[in-house]
Image (cartoon, rainbow, N blue to C red; front, side, top):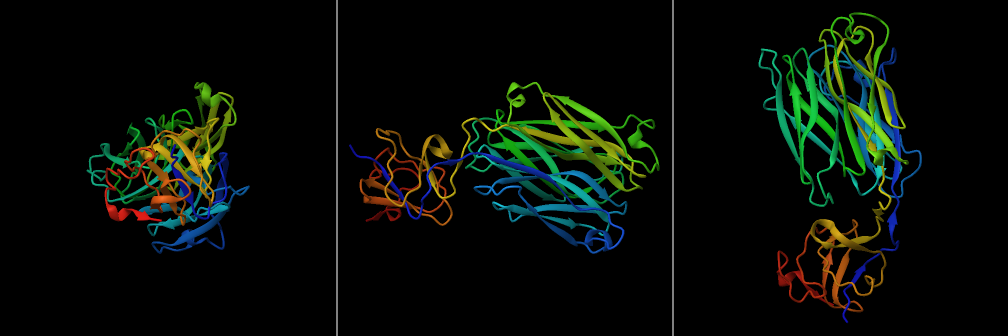
Length: 415
């Protein structure tokens, strides 16, 4: 019986890495008396402040990182704009860059973050400029702009996932700014979300950050504060003290009552009274047994009329694993679906005896080469695969009758 033989050059470690998780809050950008930080002391558009965040413990492979602002503090001058950027993610940490998109003073932010090493969890950032519908129409009515994200082909989503969304960047150019971002229609291949503005605010720039996962590993929800009128302490005028209101959510899904479980939240909407500083704070976020709670508030002369938070709870699947970054992985079906095996050695590596399934999709580490042969002992015709290949239609065990998109003799080489 012929076996399909696969070899990978310069690969050495076999198997999977167990999921890892870390989280924290970056509070490096805060109001200061003197000396002022760059976003506070200058009116130059594009001024920035950068900070390096280190994980509590190094990851075994580069994790997925999600940023979620939990406190905004900026001045009342129009236009108002900021952008919180993630970069240089590696196994020991990452960089956050805070950028001013307008001359308006920015006093500071608190940004919560989570780093997750789990092949069932994905993140997606979307930046958009000059939203066509989310503009002032001068009559104060609410307007909404739908936006759609198409998930990458190599995401192995089996069904419509859960999605939490956070606002990382925003530029508002008219008074009475009100914005909310909410998920709408979600499928296993795409997600629609809706950007809504009210009063007369116009949005020129928006950056959102999404965390995405199957419904049995990621639970998401929304907490919203809306003013109850003049008696609402968050709507009070010119008090110096901090004012907060507490909100609670009950968790009923049994999967997310188990441990270990991890949680994070961030801002996904705000509406404040123009003419004062925008000061939106959250604090005392807790998840205890089946109850999630958080306080939403403001301070000094800011009036918070509405505030919206998204939250998620992440529970690793018992059999979850992440492919070792030094190994290639092969699946029986296109788009990384079905049974799979991992190839890690310099030498030939066999699937288990009796493997009688096709091989149709491949993931190959950067800088490595996967050579697929149609005979044992690295003989016969072979294919060099140097990057991820989501679908290759070939008969099982035989590459001699190639059909599909790779039906070109030049693709083949003889050893």
